[in-house]
Image (cartoon, rainbow, N blue to C red):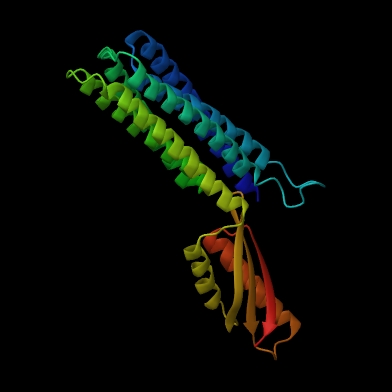
Length: 288
């Protein structure tokens, strides 16, 4: 249990680094977008601004999740991280729609002028920085086995690609194709919306007790190899934050006494905990 709480604390470091990086990059992009008249760079900067909010939400969720169980939360506060991610997804979707609206308005209702080439180099620089943040968060996520930090790392990588796409659009506008800049902004807005929708779908799955079928099958296979287990009658699983909880009904020899049957159940719990990091396993025994 102490290790799980420590991992949450380590995960906060990744969220804080993301927040600092997004503050720096969004500030640069929005300021230079204003002076270089680049809709694509502005959209990219707003994308990073939403990532600040999303990272703050993850940070808050991680800190709340570290709170121990109390009278109102007997199972702990693990799901706070998931709720925070859902809030972030709504914010990202709203900003993405605003970016799309502004870009489309710029494309059809205004005289489109090519932005300054400085905006393209700014986007490339920011992509390199964000790729470095992705590498750090990915390594941290693998070390502490955190799904949320890994998800943040994937978001960092997608942001790096968004900045590359922004640079391509701006460079294209320099080739007497000024409409490529607002078109790139439209693509960025679409990516923001897609990221928000993907995060929302994932959090809904967790909050409605959805679970990976492949993991469930792996648990079942592992249980079948525990000595004394004759069959697995039923197995279900859900998540408390990043912590899997398993409910399983196993069949054992009906001639076993209570102590021996209890030992088998304990061995099943230990197998799931040690080999798969299952937070808690509820094992019910029935005679075959």
